[in-house]
Length: 475
Image 1: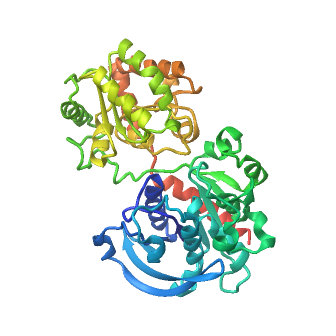
Image 2 (image 1 turned 135 degrees about the horizontal axis):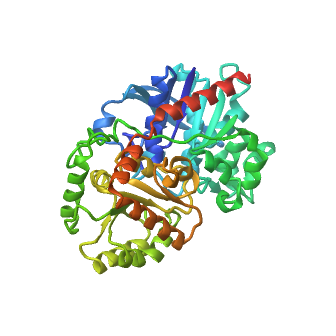
Image 3 (image 1 turned 45 degrees about the horizontal axis):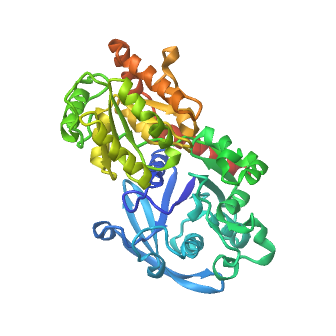
């Protein structure tokens, strides 16, 4: 079986979020299971010179973009045993930043068409083209309209993964003639709510649609989560399936992580105490080994549940003997709030601005509890990383958090959960975690149970392979 994984970003070449980590880890896990999986992504200006030097030029051709044709070069590199292809066009991709340009619709329409045009030139015919998020959503649309009846392309199946339904690729209908370039009689595929909607087109034309957790696959059929696409998702519910993401358990390994102050494992937790003490010193927190340390590593945006944290943090800090650490950047409202709280609770609360990878790992390793009160969470990787490092998650039961974290009330869970998007419910959940922390023997067993959870890509890759085979067997 051959799979072409189409993505707008992938580590180590270009990354803006979790998609890049998924795009590197899942194909590697598929290859380990004897699936011929390759990755294709744009050749961005921001890719480091060192990584560009590892690439070799393969071929060039022209790609139709509506009524005109544009140059396309293809480069190849190998990383971690996986072949990467890079789509080159300096007009579209020789810029600072991957997204947020005025012509993103045209840039990724070109990329989507180039992916399909590339295949005969590199002599790689996949059984499955697996596309991810709105930037690649036109691939199944173009395949269905322009390539499916071509002898060379016949038999290829398309899978499309929604990583976050909030981002849909919505543009004005005037782009049909100048950018998207599909015939008048086929435009109903992309038409939605008076706009062009790339993700709607992928839902209509892909053989299967997946989400990054089972819970998210049914949540997005509800108007609360769907950002307007629930009528389309409900009409195509038969083709939607949720598969929980994993994490790279080699990279995230507290027994071998060079970014930590001290390594440790579920069998020997002594190094975790060292990390806590050293982080307290670095962040100006009181050097208290016994006080529970609650942490967050997150983007500072509303859907991460920060409204609940704003409403509850004073009460928690005044009524509970804890320390609190947050690392992240985002909306000014939240950045300002956490800076003010750091000034209000010196020695007990640290607000670290930005995203510093080595510091994030030190925080996971030092924390006793990891808070994720999300309003929406398609999958979430942070709670899985927290488990791996023995930071017991305290989460709201939503999306992938519901699927990966199970309340320990019955004695066999791996964290603490609450259901309602309510500050008092979150406070009660945190209090339960703090009470459990003081039961030292029981807490140690909970930490070990958390660290022994299997969130590797092995499980996810097996589910994807089963899905691919199911689609291929349909003929």
